[in-house]
Image (tube, rainbow, N blue to C red; front, side):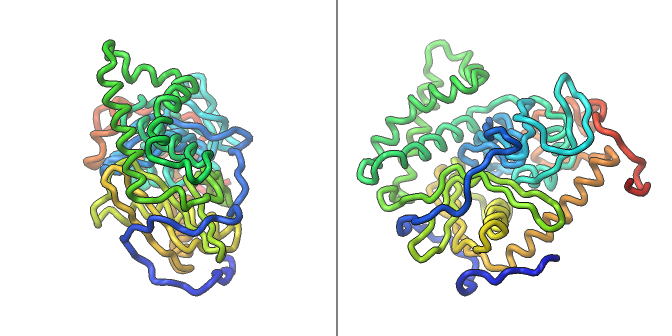
Length: 382
């Protein structure tokens, strides 16, 4: 374990669940935006099954969850994964690695980085991770995930306006134009409303997006916010060689230098027993920021537009050390599965949301031929 830098400022108590509607204006960026393997991350997101939803970004590990609802209730609503692969069959380039094969005309690569979404995939079901990252099996876009992508785009664009013009009516007025832009960039989304000739379902869908946007104004005051960064792609390499990647919805930096990381969710806040899972993503981001800037974020904030809740957490050094140890153990398990080709399914109630039942042995399916070289389980690594 590398020596740990001293955090900026005193450590603070961790949990808090009260809203923090605004912060002092940001004064400087936390990290420079970058692209994943030369390609700008771009996605199609999926909703998670606990009812919450990540409003609109592709996953930083390079894969893209193409519009599926994730079985834990939250929804990764539509950004490409920063590692360059794309879950959903639309990769933005390779994830890196020196072994590859071909799956359905797509190049398969051994994973070389980790994002919060793909880490969650492996913890949920190793076979799901394989299907998304290595096989890159197609996944259908969903209305919930795509709505998250749309809402996310609106909230990002709103900050282009001067502070005094960041009003709810202006934000709602951005919805139709952002939907048009989204369809232009991802024509496959037109399939969502192909069976809606009168346009009634689409109209209701857009109205729900407007309601989510409007609810945000009851949780935060954008006239008092000047984000240091929006849609910030960050990447850090640990001393072990593990690369961590992520896309942060918003970074606020106060005049004091305190950093707040904010993530929008278009679903409902999780029940208390699921809160730690939601915070894992934020602690992941905090770890990356710490490794990049040697600054521990003052606050992690999840804004749940579906239920009008704000979940906050003030991390300390011990939190980030625990997350780093967890990610190293997780990556070792992923490495072994990649080398042996043994990706075991982990059946849970979340299987009902999975697009890949036809390929899953738990449902009588057969996975595609494994596209990477393998070694026998238990043999020495070369």
